[in-house]
Length: 226
Image (cartoon, rainbow, N blue to C red):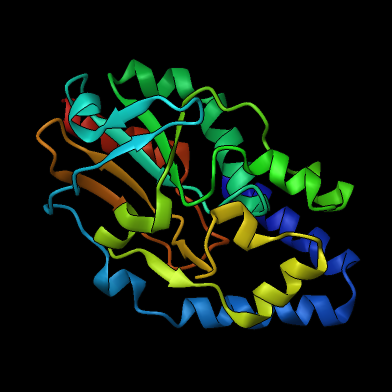
C-alpha cells in the first residue's frame, strides 16, 4: 500500500538524517498541517475549474478534451524533489491499467517545469535525492505555471521557511524548478471528475505525507461509472 511505503520512507529519514534536519522536516510538517486547505478546497459537487495546459511532451491538453473520453482522475504533484510524490506517481503508474479499465483517464498536475529532472541534475542535487525521482511516467503530467489550476481549487500554500532551508541544503533549487520565487505548491490532493465536469470525489489531505490509495480511487470511479 502506498501510505505504508510512505511511512517506511519517513522512518528511514528519521533513522538516517542528522537531528537538525529532522527537526526542520517536522517543524515544516506541523506548519503545513495547521493550514486551512481542507476548508477552502473544492469539494464533491463543485465544478472542476477549466484548464488548458501542456504535458511533459509540450502537447496541449484541456479539461474538456479529457472529459470527452470519460471520467478523469487528477492528482497534484509537488515536484521531483518530493519523495512521497514520486512514490505516489509510481504506485499510480503500476495500477494504470486498473484505472483505465474503469473508463477513466489519469493525469498529474504540477507547478514544476517539464524539464525539472534536468534542472535538478544540473543544480548539483546529491544522488540520494536523484535516486528517488520517477523518470518515466506513462500518463500526462501537466505544467500548471504559477499554480493557477491549483489556486482555483483552493489547494495552494507557501512552503514553510524550514522546508525551504532543508531543500536548499540538499541542492534543490525550487526557484529554478518552478520558474518563480513564490515557493508555492499544491496540496497533494486527488480528485475524481465526472464527465459532466462535476467533482465526484476528493482526497485533500492537508498533509504531504498522506496520499490517496489506488483502491480509494477505484472505489470512487465505480460510483461514477455504475
